[in-house]
Length: 73
Image (cartoon, rainbow, N blue to C red; front, side, top):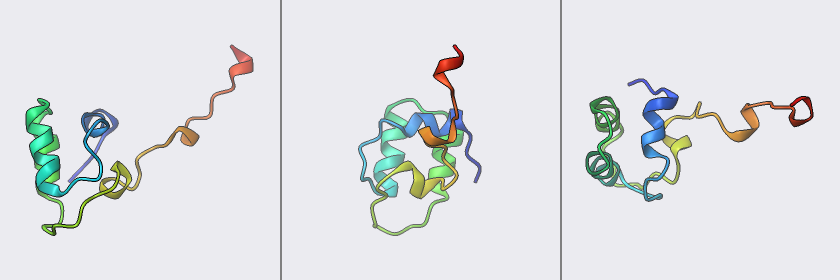
């Protein structure tokens, strides 16, 4: 399983919290690429809902990861 910013962006508007099956259903209905669905299928098969993208991809960059000095522009 591998995630990129482009792939995970298809899940940003998912209905969190969501189970694995709900995320797969959402990805299919929203037209996400096959790689997204394949990655979701590789998640653990428990019925525990995931509360955010960070639980699926712990390295998901947050707004704090992008250092941008507004004064320079």
